Image (cartoon, one colour):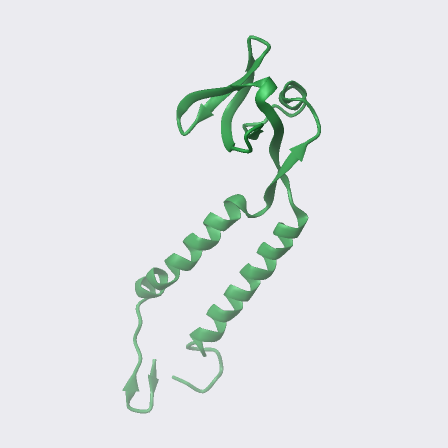
Length: 137
């Protein structure tokens, strides 16, 4: 594409590489953007039995929090699973809250508006394109 005596040339490969960080950021945010931790007003046993969650966020009596993946009740008195890839657990009597990931309409709407805004900024930054009828050849 030329504008007067100035030649503008950007390969499609360079355009793709320039957008890659933005796309990666949006995809990363999408993975967690539409859910939030919700505390359940049930016992750990009831939470596991009702929802069979892939992970739970546990809050203990000393206010510490950690996430257990593949949670289950062991020996009737312990909540066990994987924390950081290592087997871990806690006595049910030490658990004050159990939270599970649930859908969040607010975060979903925020994600939609963010994506639309970023795409709008990208489109505005590209300027006119070849063959768009803008007189540039």
